Amino acid sequence: LAVDANNIMQFAPGASWAVMQCLQLLLTLALLFWILGRAALGGLAVCLLCFPLNLAVMRRIKRLQDRLMAEKDERMKVVTEAVGSIRALKLNVWECALEQAIRRKRAVELETLSGFLRLGAITSTLWLTAPTLSAAASFLLKTQVLKEELTPSMGFTALTLFQLLSVSLTFLPMVMSQAMMAAVGLKRLSSFLAQPNVDGRPQAQVGRLGDFQWVGSTGFVLARGSAA
Image (spheres, helix red, strand yellow):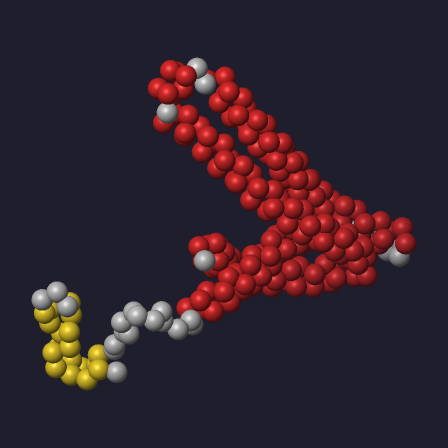
């Protein structure tokens, strides 16, 4: 339940951002087709090819991050145990054995961290190169295939629009993934809160238009009014 609540909390700030990014995506596409015409299809195709790749990489990064945190917790557990029982370690000469155990856990953690950083580099590369590749595809389609004129004003404006398009298509999969996890968490929390009360527990009462007072060890009671 704590994980479900955390997923809902993480998605809540990004909900409005997701709506804004969708509107920005539609407006950017409209401006690109207005400026470049049919040639904008080349850049759009490149961005759409990067979309599933970004989604797959981000899912893999999330799995690696979860595994990395679990491995870090295991290593810190051993380190905390060693610090707490340092006197027993010194008396029994267990330093070498415990040091090897910590090194093994650290090696596993570093291996996961290495994969995490490699995927982060791939994501950064896609994010930085996607606007240039999209613009190049559209410009080549416009000048070499459609044989249309490309002016400097059209080119620089299209570059800016492709940058905005790339940002939307890069972070939209992440927001969609968070939305799915938040929906699952909300369903699980709703199901849990809708469960009946445990037998033997006192039922809650709701008082309306009444006066309440503290009586002995029984707590608050309804002195005058109606209870529902």
